[in-house]
Length: 388
Image (cartoon, rainbow, N blue to C red; front, side, top):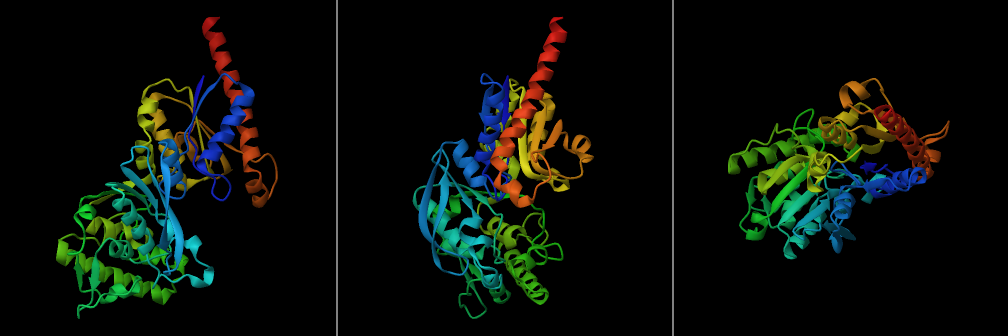
């Protein structure tokens, strides 16, 4: 038997690799001879950096950068095993967890620190980037990143704008004369798991601004500032950014990058699976079962999450997919819309969320052991029927 173990992280509990290893432990308790392939997955958000670096035997690089409010911190990024591609999570230098609740202010927070990480990698000779844009605390259209890479954002008097999203309401011109050829030639893939446009009621400011600290009135001003940015892009570069799906990700960072850099938006889970070679692995046809999982399985799962991506790959080869999850909602859609063979909650009885999160490793080991015993029993029955 050969089992591919490809779960997402369980947010707040275990990383993707820890989840995969826990599942592997449960399987080995049942049958030491089963061949297991633990490959942590991610959907382009939290955990993607670890997933890609681990899967490719890459390395981590640390450097000093500025946080969303301009304070010096130690940031890091990953270089994949090919030594050509850097993986950068926006949340590392520009994320919500870096700020206290009373510090949240998307009018002034900046992605500049993320740009410093990119600049550091370019100076090391990196030419290809995967940018994971989840968890940002910003609404600056990625102008902080672009400033760190040499772009200047000027008002009508030729003065440089201050950091932050609100300042963009005074934008008149984008100066790229100081952008190096290395930056212009670098290729960026932006792992994105939302389809929000750049501006409007479903855009970056209205949908994500409140969780970053913006009041209803501030949301309107921030949306206007992004519209000004989009208008300048249209005038200078001939690109209409306003209603591009996904451009609103990370406070418009996705839109700013695709308008000024050699960048493209990619569904996060597809990008991760492609990068680690999962389609080729499944196409070989020697996988008997796939065990995947995530913290919560619900209607959102089908919109670019790990379990949905795994089942999409496995279905054409008719490989059974088992999902182990902390919580399962809306079970009626699992078979018809998600094509999961079966899904199991790892909780073994009534328990609090805190209790489940504290014991995730043990719960995963126990659940995978029980599930694999059932899978082996079914496989033996099939073999007995064939030989009999």
